[in-house]
Length: 341
Length: 269
Ligand SMILES: Cc1cc2nc3c(=O)[nH]c(=O)nc-3n(C[C@H](O)[C@@H](O)[C@@H](O)COP(=O)(O)OP(=O)(O)OC[C@H]3O[C@@H](n4cnc5c(N)ncnc54)[C@H](O)[C@@H]3O)c2cc1C
Ligand SMILES: Cc1cc2nc3c(=O)[nH]c(=O)nc-3n(C[C@H](O)[C@H](O)[C@H](O)COP(=O)(O)OP(=O)(O)OC[C@H]3O[C@@H](n4cnc5c(N)ncnc54)[C@H](O)[C@@H]3O)c2cc1C
Image (cartoon, rainbow over all chains, first blue to last red; front, side, top):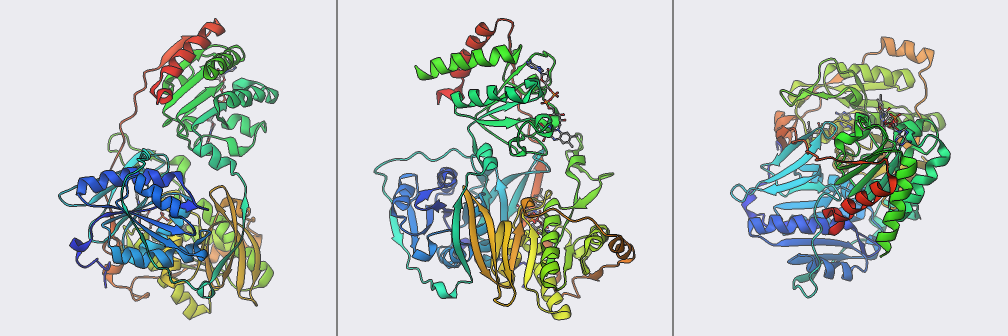
């Protein structure tokens, strides 16, 4: 028994990725996995294998080839139409066992995390959660699964030495998505699915579409955040108008959330959300450490504050020292003009 | 019902020693993992409505007793602390093995378990893998990210929940027994009652170890873990070259800022 080491590690070859899709639409993270998966597979000199489960997912399978998969295994069945742990795990686990990839990656989305925990346990292998970097050593063929630890202050390198596949979930928006190469060739294999609805113990009774404001903020490419420098809740309009022009989602410091100006779902920081947009605008935010831990990994940080010594300028790339009531509308007008042109 | 509860360091007090790059554990207070509080409350509410007993189980060092007492203060009927030096260094695979084994043992000793509650994830390990792991080992359905319990039907042997998914919610019916991992939105933890506090003060958890659960040394802790933390490091701080623009002339500042923004690689690609 023991940790149930995988016998014959050498017989495992290839990099497998779970192509998450909902209603025939691939989740963005799927192509991010294709991007990093392709790199790992090339480094190891093995094939990249896509695993698609769902119902009527031919287009997704085709796109997986165009995004870099050498082989795509398609498991198509009406019972897989809406994601369900039981049905997906039951179908995917034996296929992974048979295909024997040495690495198997999923997105660290709610769906990917849900599924990964079940599959890894059944396959009796290790699973690293929520990785932000991945690399592989072509000599040892070990996956360096790197994930943030301790409030994102540190990075931990996790290895899975004696079990296969080496599984990991990968945090969305951390990897460059694989470009689509129309005409790229690959093999699409339909795997027969034997699923009897009457043997499943769970049933999805309904799906409620409901944009989750927190998820929107977390996934936004542009965040427009405001703080107490706005001085009055009626000035929030400034933020929303600006966000409209730059296609952003509104964020907030805790000060104005606690003051009841805006809902908690907007709060960025230690006790709020962690965001990593391409551009983060901070208007009238002082930049307390509890705020900056939630946004300091943004690609580009732009701050407007009237206090030249405000700590926000220490994490900002671009800063304007001035009155936000004058600067923000002027910037908005300038950007509106130039983005339209 | 069984609630899996982990004690974790209070994140607002977590610090990294800048010299050694390791976590400073000294002087950091422990709390019940914030999500597990809601797992406990969910079980207590079902108990209020349908009866039954709530057993809280935790794998960890002896001082986890503190959190188990808190659980008794709000209404848990009994607590089990699975504690063994050999269990140190467990990853989620080894942790779910021990907890699943403990739950089997709870069934043998105290009767059938219909519902198991876990938190969505912990704030220290932060993987969210233990719940699905336990369910897989017990071969029961797992319902993750539960934000609402719509119906519990002990006679019909099913439960209906709403779970959070990308872009919305799913309404799922599951046969019992089932394992739920819960979100904070599910409920608010009740306050401890005076009799509860008195009970908690005298409470001693049932303590089991590796041998009680009939597990091999190689099945628990570091030895029973397929993953290892090979090393950890503090990522180099990203140095930002801050460009400060004088905003006394707003129009000019806006133009300069727009120039720099639109020239930035983020915008150009
Ligand atoms: C830096 C670092 C990184 C790590 N990365 C990984 C990794 O990628 N993969 C991996 O497998 N392990 C990893 N581990 C080990 C892992 O975090 C554990 O310590 C494991 O025991 C619990 O996992 P978790 O805290 O993530 O629990 P989660 O899966 O997040 O917990 C979910 C729920 O399970 C229940 N639960 C969890 N632990 C217990 C417990 N001890 N007693 C009772 N109930 C419990 C609670 O209800 C909890 O809310 C890592 C550890 C460190 C220090
Ligand atoms: C345990 C704990 C957790 C916390 N968690 C969070 C968290 O998750 N998120 C968070 O944000 N905070 C958090 N905080 C609070 C944090 O410490 C700060 O108090 C908070 O971020 C300050 O918000 P602020 O920047 O909007 O307000 P202030 O600090 O009051 O800053 C307002 C800024 O606006 C500027 N300003 C004023 N008028 C103008 C003007 N006309 N034009 C331009 N600039 C102007 C001022 O110069 C000042 O810099 C937490 C605190 C604690 C103790």
